[in-house]
Image 1 (cartoon, rainbow, N blue to C red):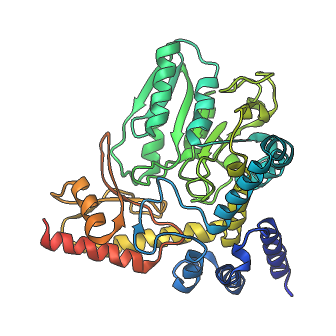
Image 2 (image 1 turned 120 degrees about the horizontal axis):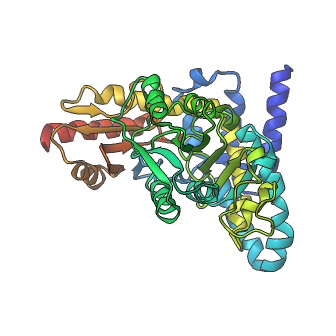
Length: 430
């Protein structure tokens, strides 16, 4: 037996053991999923990206609607069955005797979970705090940084609304200055994006806010390049990784940021209301927690977890989501999502009036489109009403279209049905 195969089987056994108390892995669907993972283990991520037999087994690990095609996974992703079962099991346990099982049993699982998340992020567990979503993680930083009146923050008008509102509130309260960039996405040249950020930096700039993937259209910003330029000028770097974490393969420290926040209920498919904050070790002590902590200037990452009572069931089931993600493999997941995007876009390009508003390069699995002369809300509503295809219409700043975000359970036949519906609309409804 090869070393790689032995390593794979040990990892697989550990992952199954993690979720072994859930019924899924004992079911026919679960066993089929495990067999598929083992059978295709020798194939590269690129080779496996278009293998529908494998991804059909992945789909069986979910409980997604058999009649509605969900192409809005960018809002929030469904959880695989093993994660749903874990939430239900931990919740039932909590309700048997809440103050005992939550605070004396399940609460002890936070440190192993921290280690698991650090493994995904490629950093020290002492740099990871567990919270409820990207907004909470990022607002911890936005409101916790020691900024004074006149200090400048560089950000874009295409950033996520919650973050924009948080920065506006900080400006209103403390007199900091927001320096706005506005991009006409898609932009194919990373250098153009980096230069726009750099040109906004001044000696008063203290922070740059970078959205790693623009959620509206899937534009991937060159976060590391911008971070390097910022650090060369003594500027701190905050990265919004809500759509990049577990969609793209990267280590958070490789972005060279100081702070990073993400929602785990997006591309990790963790329970709804789960998130993660990364703070570079040497930055922890100077960052104030969003919620009161016993020692607000402590260098312990746990000071950012003083949330009061929370759902221990949701928190602990994150580990099952991590195990599921690792069984598929991060690189395989990334390649599949890219494959699906290019699969439907290449077909849709042949439809008269089709316009793509996302970068043509590899990028990520998110894409935005429109049909010339067609109102986006009307088309999105028509797709659901007539073909049971769920999408979302986007209208934010200068970005307008319909966003398509498949997931690992999406099959090419689902996208064929979507493209066929677009053709029908273009031929009969315009």
